[in-house]
Amino acid sequence: MIRLFKHYIPRAVFLLGLLDFVLLMAAAELGWTLRIWQLGSKVGPIAERIPQLVSFAIALQCAMIAVGSYGGEALQSLRFGVARLLVAVSIGVILISVMFFLLPELTLWRSNTVYSMGLAILLLFAVRLIFGRLFGGDAFKRRVLVLGAGARARRISALAARPGSSFIVVGHIAMGDSEPVVVSAIRREDIDLAEYVRAVAADEVVLAQQERRNSMPVADLLRIRTTGVHVNEISTFLERETGRVDLRSVNPSWLIFSDGFSSSRRLSAWAKRLFDFIASGILLILATPVIGLFALIVKLDSKGPAFFRQVRVGHYGDNFTIVKLRSMKVDAEAPGEAIWAEKDDPRITRVGRVIRKLRIDELPQAWMVLKGEMSFVGPRPERPEFVAELATKMPYYAERHVVKPGITGWAQINFPYGASLDDARQKLEYDLYYAKNYTPFLDILILLQTVRVLLWPEGAR
Image (cartoon, rainbow, N blue to C red; front, side, top):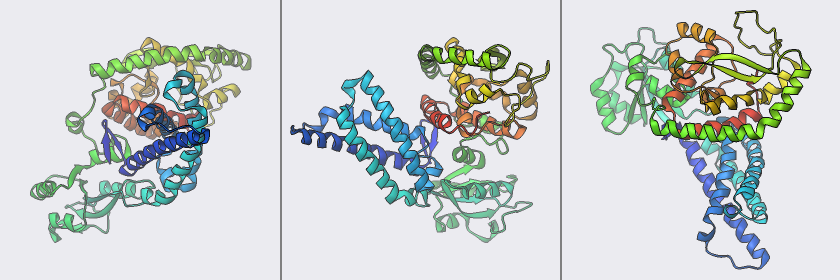
């Protein structure tokens, strides 16, 4: 894994992204050159068109990130990766067209863009055809040795076996586990730990004992660490590999002493608020006709108001009123009773199913963003009744409120809509990761990948 602006990115994804950017720049330059030759003109120095080449590459790469071209499935399956690539190119055409309208001096001519786009498709397809198995295989995966043979250690092996995993387990060392469950584990007493790490060419050692008391080989770990091998405990490892703060292994001291929770720093908070204010104002101007049209359709489809208002828990636990287009019947809940939304919920109206799938019901929330009660990116705001219940059943639930709630978020793009206690726990783990590792860079990634959720809304309810 490579940590970029506090966010973990698999090495294969990072290297593929760099290679794609270079290829996109090359495609833009070749497209420009071919078109100029076709017109019989002289090709000038490349320095004269660097901004145009960069804008072309950035537009297409943002589109590729947005549709999931760097996800695990895209790296594992050539067919899936090419399909996402074609969708990305289509979105890239739209982005470049908008850029040409707004900033024509920073974009390629339309005729150059046609040539460059065709070359980009060929080059990107070729690199996936040639290096696809390499990027999706074990070549870029970290070699991990696990200290422990209990349930925690088995979780790491299960994670390594998942498609798209960024590491492989090269062995388990039983460290006095009372109930070892990994049958292939080697007993600690039978080996020299530091020599064994060298023999299996491990890049990292992960502490995953069930009980650390009297089982921590401090001298061996110090020797291993000084040879350049990383040593991590399981909570840090799982955070990096899953993009979640694992509630089953984390403890208060880890949260206190680990890096993170800087979302309230003045500069980042100011930048986030400025973006929210400008973007929400623009969105409200553009979306007002759409909101008005669907408000009328909602009103005609079923009895009741067009808009739905409900109290939610916001920043630092303060309550606010959220406004959405109504997608459920007016008598969806008995007075004073809060009910989770379910799959194929019978309370949803005909129009409600459509606007939920398309996320149109969320558009009025831009007003809450403009007022500063919400942000574009953040944890989903929950009802006070659910918050009170979940806070008694889950540790660290209150910590998700250290950032403003958002229309989209890290949990929303990584976990389908859930309505059970276990679903809420997994979403909390994503929310805590966001609160702990927030940077404007992570916000940009989430906003881009929200496009994928809009195009393939399997989690909408």
